[in-house]
Image 1 (cartoon, each protein chain N blue to C red):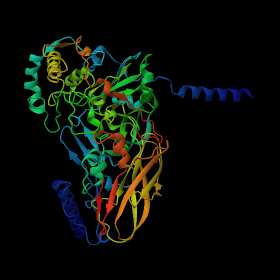
Image 2 (cartoon, one colour; image 1 turned 45 degrees about the horizontal axis):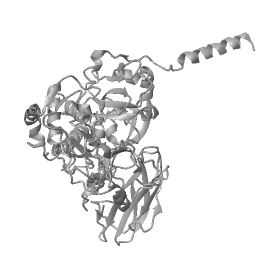
Image 3 (spheres, chains in turn blue, green; image 1 turned 180 degrees about the vertical axis):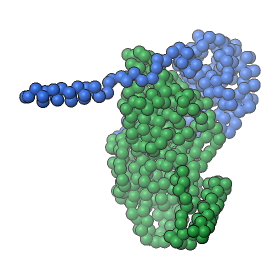
Length: 185
Length: 405
C-alpha cells in the first residue's frame, strides 16, 4: 500500500472516530440539593421520605373539616367524582371484582398506609395541592385511618408509626400475571 | 381590477363569516358554511398562517369533567391510523398544566452516580428516536362495559385511545448520563402538573423502549398531552406515560403511589386485585359503520376500524357480520407497526337484513381478543380497567346502526 493511501485511510478513520457518539454526552448539569429537595416528595412503604412531624385524630378532624369535607363530604362519604374515603365494610371477601358499585375506600381497598401520606401531601386539596404542612398531613392521615377503623382514635401518626400500620386490603393485591399468548386472564 | 378586488373582498368576507361562525358557535353547532356554487369560477381564500379544517368538517373531543377529566377522541371521524394532535384523547387529574419551556427541567436522581438536571434544549441535543405508537387509558371502555347504551358512538365506547408519531430521547440514553447504581429495579416518574402524578415504572421498561417525548406528529407535544415533555412507554397503560414529566427517581422498590394501588389496579372475581398491570392487551373496535350512522342503500360497505396491542404487532383482525357465528379475515390497511393502531377493513355487501358486526384482534403472541362473555367470566362485572372485550354493533333492517355491548 502506498504511503499516501495510508495517510488518507488514517485521516478517514480519525474522522470517523471523532464523530462517533460517546457513551455519555455530558449534557445537562449536576443536580444540587436545592434542585432535588423541593420535588423529592415521594414516600415509600418503608417510610422513606416521611418527614418529621406528627398528627392526631382530633387535629385531623379539624384539618379534614376545613380542607377536605367540602369535596369528600362531612363524613368522607364522597360526592360525584370526589371519591368516598371512609368505610370499613366489607371486612371480608374483597368482592370488588364482582360488583363495581361497592365503594372502594381507604379502609377496604388501599393496601399501604404510606400511600395516604404521599397522596394527600402531593395532590390534595385539589385547589391548592401540596399546601398542607407535614403536621396537617399526618393529622388528616390519622383521622382517615381511624374513621376507617384501621387505627384507634388515640393513635399518633408520624414517620415511625405510619409505615407500621397494616392495611386490611394488603393481602389481596397480586402482581400482574398476564403474559399474552392464548390464555386470557 | 376593481371588479377582481371586489370579488376577492367578498370571498374573504364569506370566508371570515364561515370561520367566525364556526368558532363562535363552537363545535356543537357549526354555522352552515357558505361555499360558492362553482368554486372553480371564483378565487379561493387567501393564504393563511394555519391550515384550518374545512368548515364542513367538525370533529371534536367530548370532554367529561373539568379539572379532573377526560376528553374522548372521535374515533368514528378518523381515517388511517394517526390521530390528529388536537383530537388526541386527554386525561388529566388536576387540570392541563401550562409550562414555560424556558423554565422546564427534568431532574434524574435517586440511586444514580451523577444526579442531573436537563433543560428542554438539553433533551433535544441528544440523539432522538421517532416512532409511532398508541396511548390508551386503561379505563377506556369502562362505561360501555358497565352501562352500555344503544346510542353510544365509537367515541363514547373507546375514545380514550389515540395514535401519534412521537419524537424524543430514549430514557436509556439519559440513564447513561447519570449512571444507575446497583440494586435499582424501578424508576419513579412524576409530573410537574397540579396532580404531581407519580407512577413506579419497572427498570427493564425504562431501559427497553421508554422515551422522553417532546414532539408529537411533527411539532411540539400538545399542551393537554404533556407539553413540553412527557414519558412515553409504548404499549403501557396511558396513566403510566407521565405527562409534563419533571423527574425520574431511581429506586429499589415501587413507591406504591395512589395510581398504582387504590387506582389502576384490577379487582378480580377471585377476591384479588391485580397490580402493575401495565401492558394493554390486544383490542379492536369497528369505527364504521357504527352509531349514529344509517346505511343509505344496499350494496357494498367497508367495515373498518382500528386494532392495537401493547405486546407487539397485530397479526390478524377477523370480522363477523352475524354476531360471531362466522368470521372472515379482514385486510390490514397500511403500516402494521408494533404498539400502534392498525387499520383494518372488510368489504361487506349489505342485503338489507339485520346484521351484527364484530371485530376480533389477534396479536403476535397468539393472544385473541376475548368475547364479552369470556371477559365477564374471567374479569368479573366489577373489574375496573383493561376493558378489551369484542364490541358488537347491530345493523337494523332500516340501516340504522346501534351499539350492542
